[in-house]
Image 1 (cartoon, rainbow, N blue to C red):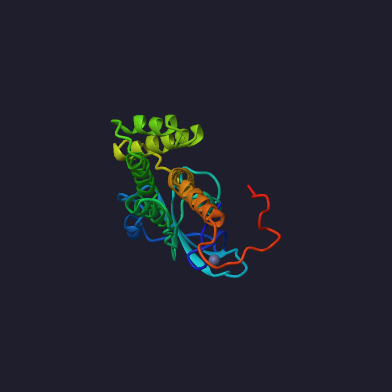
Image 2 (cartoon, rainbow, N blue to C red):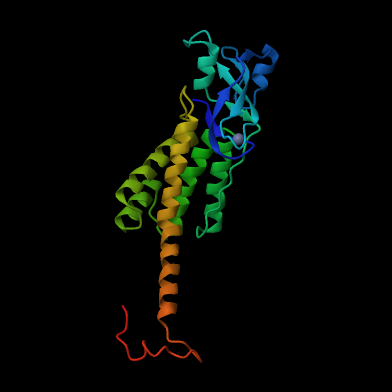
Length: 242
Ligand SMILES: [Zn+2]
């Protein structure tokens, strides 16, 4: 499914393929930025897509390496399933309020990587975010496994978030240790990993900070007025509200 963040409007939309994909000349294959090495098996196809957001409908160009000899289906069907490099690309750099700046900027960069199809870089950074998060909470246990477990055992994160953090760790380790295998991590998997990374940051930093602010505002409302401010007669001497 050719769904992506539209580089024009920034919405996550389905991209409708308007043109049968055509093969680029061979000398351009290995220059395709998202390929890591000269690729003589998979040929690079290009097509034009229209954003399905009715407020946008602008055109994007999609580029994908297809193994047309080995895969079944028409090139159009293969293109729809392929990992597509988009032009223009939307660089997504979300803010993470209440997250320590160095962790927030790493998390934001992970999203930026995914925006340009750099799934492995995104996952490697997500793993760094998990470990840095534990350190920021004062967990000095050696190794990332122990750190995640300590976050869970200390009640900072739920069992589900701990489980997700371990998955980020495993996928991140595969990349960091060069144990990448034949199939690179898909954009969908990388997106799921970043979703869990966002949940972790929300659970550890953002929600506690939000709750703290809510409590402070509550306490402020409860404080008696410092000066002036006549108390309405119906409330004076009334039962305190709790
Ligand atoms: Zn659009």
